[in-house]
Image 1 (cartoon, rainbow, N blue to C red):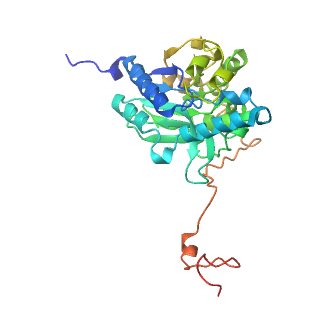
Image 2: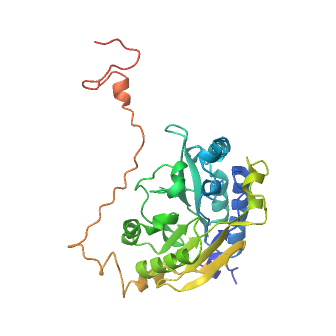
Length: 343
């Protein structure tokens, strides 16, 4: 008899990783993430989901420090954050991509992304989906940072605001309070999302109610990935560590990861003030079948009354006309290229 494979055993198993990062230590956090991917694969999962800004950790201090109160410490923390952020263009998730390919596992993870192409100093809260061959399938930058997050992250765009085809199903996701943006949710529903991924820093009853509402509204599986974090999870050399987190055992975030079935029933979690994997079986076909009674972007929609336009173009901060720079096509009414005399 041929040996059964993991795929035969658990074809729809998913795992939410609620394990803390090492706050502001990218290398140590990526090591933990790769180990968690291996653990998820051993549990029979075909998808591993991590929280918002998992690498190198969420900037929790922005909710307790203000530049006016301690500008020096805020500046030191931000400089450290820039140094430890993920540059996707330079292969900053290479170790995790290798782990995904090694275990033939789809990985979805939130990162603090450094835009090293334009300005080299702007950060984004970015949600990345890595395919089971290790390639990056989606890179979605959070559209609107929340409250003090705007002092840390820039604004994303509509690029990649659509599901990705994976062996685990059609995966799409929004980050934290993007999930309170009805039109952003609708864009994913219209794309036929089956597993709706919600990496977040939020937690608590209101957030869990939101996850249940999305599952009922979108008739999709909803995976809410929270971050379990305590003071002891900050890097030992974090600036102001003892001032910010005097009690190493105090919970900075309880996690509250959960899996919700199409229709709104919680099937796993919430994992509150705990560390581990939250595992569930989520058949994408069940999400498709659940649309029989409600399909808000299909037979329940009224396109004659409501219309939504989504701009999925990526919006670079700078566009350079190389032909004009070479003098082949001078810009009408503009200055001559640098180094050339006026004509």
